[in-house]
Length: 361
Image 1 (cartoon, rainbow, N blue to C red):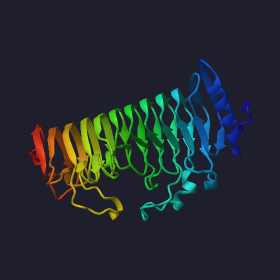
Image 2: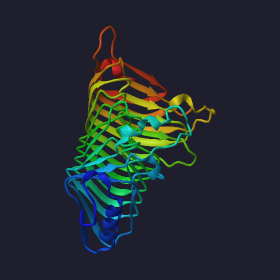
Image 3: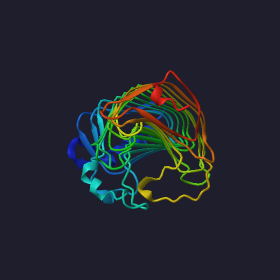
Image 4: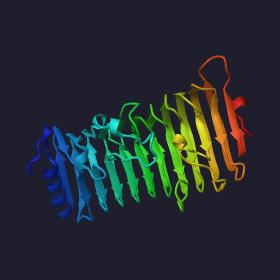
């Protein structure tokens, strides 16, 4: 506010925020940017480094993204090449997406125009975000590329269940990512782990309603890197379309552990490995199966499913899934006139302590 920003929910504060960032980035030692209580509207924000010191953004008020799409070339808030950054507080980052969701045509067109993501991090190291809320983005809430040592903690991330492509947290080509004690409910993937990512720890997360926790899509583009060392632990999924999911086109490899996960009325298969994922029926098979999905552990998965198919493993007949471990899988169909079941194709592994109907091997 000292630089001219106004928290009245109307005045454009973009210039004040830009000036605050430039001053903080040029300062040595620990620099703090404070958004006091109020509603600060901005257009595109570019937080670009490298910076001379460490920066804390204290969000006590709310940041609102302008609803004028003509202002945005790509995204709303972009953080690039910044090390040692913290964003904390009790305020909100609100994309005000409801005003523009009708312009999203991605469900119909493969080459659709992408609406602005809310928070984009490229080449960011040592970032902590805690306590804040992310609400109603125009597209993704958060997208990370080439990031390392990231901690996301105690966040609340929300958007209506029918909001299009409002993925919560997406990452690609990143490492050492921790998502802890966060509550998420939106219109797409709760958390999605993209190609080239390794060392992901997801713990204490509550998801739903949404599409669940996904690895992929993998193999969509040529020369994508593997996903390795992903752990999902002590999580709850509520009324989501999927629980824990691996979705792949072709040409991808992956390795994961899912442990101590509770499902509450999760629709569709609870555990899915799909080596021919094809959204919107816009891709075609070329018969060139190069998927390698191996060393996957599902342990202590409990709760209820709203469909009979609690376990679904759909793997390639050319390259079957191997090293799949099902340990203490006890998810039961909550409906009537049917039984809980597992559908497993071209998967090899072991099953112990599971409901009899869910033992694939």
